[in-house]
Image 1 (cartoon, helix red, strand yellow):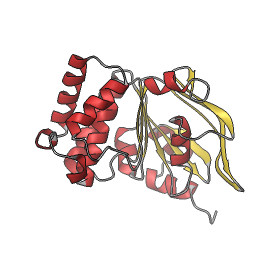
Image 2 (image 1 turned 45 degrees about the horizontal axis):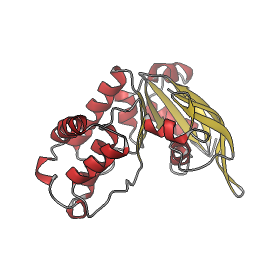
Image 3 (image 1 turned 45 degrees about the vertical axis):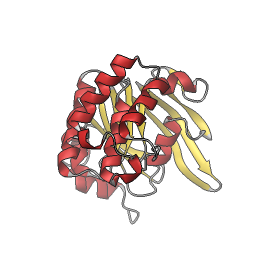
Image 4 (image 1 turned 135 degrees about the vertical axis):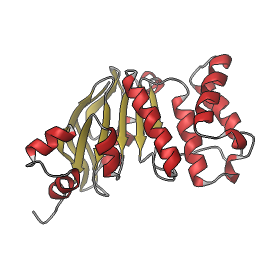
Length: 240
């Protein structure tokens, strides 16, 4: 579960996140949409413990990310919009490194990484230096390394960027499976189709505020049955 309470993040005069409150329960696939500079990535960085909020709090499975970051992060899988990888390692070495960080047993580490690597067609790349891989392949490596410790909460920022249609489909299927198994899934994206197809609930951010939250059907009912695209454009239109 993710619990965000009155979260605000200020950079000088800029309020990047403005009094956001949201609860995403276990087993929910939540997609957050918003134009550039809406506050999505800043919110996610606070959730991941990479930024301190100006005020408010974030709890991951009951653990405050500020007061108890180790316990919170232990339960979370986080992939940023531009993942950091150790370029001199191979994917196989990186998976082992990640597994060790999360205290995984050797057998579990091997089984989980092999299973996920197979689904993302990484077999031929496992022994190659990460620095030699394409952007899309690096993205797949980052996703596998994030998911292999069986997290209770998944937080991905623009995870489809760099993925081809086949591997985007693989990721969608895996995230849906995770949610169906009781994992909290929180994804930011610019792709409205991902929200329409995958989300149990959708949030729309604009200028740091969460301006709408609900299922696709609830958003349509509140906005005269418009398409998600029309709803999104209406709620993020600065001219209105």
